[in-house]
Image (cartoon, rainbow, N blue to C red; front, top):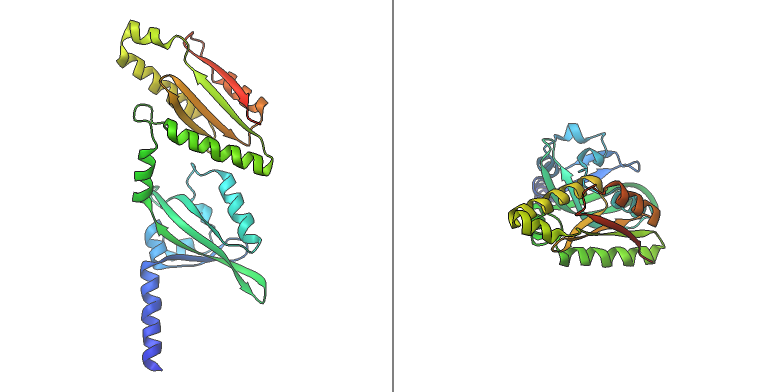
Length: 245
């Protein structure tokens, strides 16, 4: 029995060092954090205990993701997904997280999470989805996002809009100033888009001088206001907002 107990203690110690886990109470306040979780985040256990996991939240993560997560686990169901976080020193890391309720006689008394660091894998995948010139999503990626968001809007009967962007007479820029200048214009326009949209929106390069901005949870009017608000005064740019049924 003594040997089994020692082996069990060694097993628990091994998990503590190598498996990123945490537990919270029913309000989401951290009550337990493994050594591996502390190492991943850069915080000590004492700095994590009594705090909520939003201490680690990356500003790029959409609020809708956390709303769905919390709704799922408070209903007594497990949640699984990818989350982008920030370390104590503001470094970026990604985790594949599995979170589930802890029950006592049928009552939820807290939540426990197990995470795997997938930063390298996620960064590699994201690079394959990015347009090399503009840093926006490429055509294939933006098409995938559009289909997913359309399906979600239809399933939950929520609004979803798309802004279609075309640079008028863009060929004249290339003809008059050269393709290098044309590339700089495309990069500048792309930066403007990324600064204007919400964290939950997706911006992609559809073709040469054509772009798509996907706006989940946005009405036709909201999309139109955004389109009009970001329209430059020069003659090389035009915007139109379309409602997706």
